[in-house]
Amino acid sequence: MCTNYEYFKRQNKERGSRCTSHSFTPGSSLLVIMARGCSSSSSGFSWLKLFAIVIGVLTPLVYFAEQRLESFYIFETDHLHDLAKRGIAAHGNDTRSVVKYIVDELAERPAVKNYINVEEEWVFNNAGGAMGAMYIIHASITEYLIIFGTAVGTEGHTGRHTADDYFHILTGTQLAYVPGEYEAEVYPQGSVHHLRRGDVKQYMMPGKCFALEYARGWIPPMLFFGFGDGLSSTLDFPTLWRTSYITGREMIKNLLQAKF
Ligand SMILES: *[C@@H]1O[C@H](CO)[C@@H](O)[C@H](O)[C@H]1NC(C)=O
Image 1 (cartoon, protein in one colour):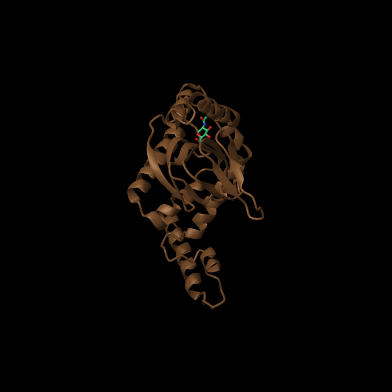
Image 2: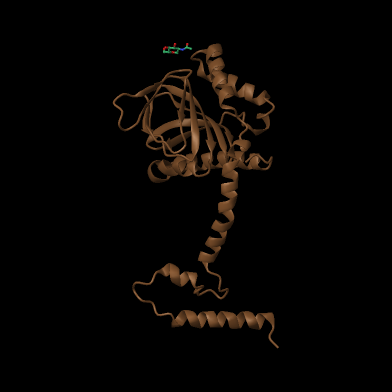
């Protein structure tokens, strides 16, 4: 009689012996060996299998979600642009009041009011060589809304993102450049710079400039860009920690309310 346990052990032993008898020739790929289940662990379960299963499960989920990304969005691009323009019309270059005007309206808007952060928690942000500060109004898996800017100007790489980015200029001017052009794109106060998913530009805020930045698409992959300069250059760990804390807290808060 063969119990399940004995059967399992025998299977493992057979697998083990097959493994050891496999001679490692210089040309044979490590992947092939791993794929044969030749792991030294007693479970006989290779990391490659786990990886394959995770990819196998995630791929259809991501594909499915990708087809329906639109249905996860709670912010409307037309409304945000209109809101930014109305804020400027009401408060001009008093940007603190413009930001308050924007957040106050969002805090009363039924579709979004449960998903926004009304505390102005400012943190530095270094990414793509540019430096500024941001206040996270909303962060979830498919959207973020922040106030981003600097009072002293900055310049850098936009990053190549998995989301569409709408940069509503609240005060100051943003310039952008793409290879092949000889003139800058100019985005003045009240305009919106739409950086399409996958596109990349060099950008500059020649002086004081603040914007309402809205991104929609896949947000988690963008975080690598958002943290890159902090981890490789500034090493400003308190800022990295605070940024991670606020972003994580908002994403989880929204996930708990079924906002992806
Ligand atoms: C903000 O200041 C700039 C520069 O002084 C000026 O050109 C612009 O008209 C001002 N905007 C508003 C809405 O007052």
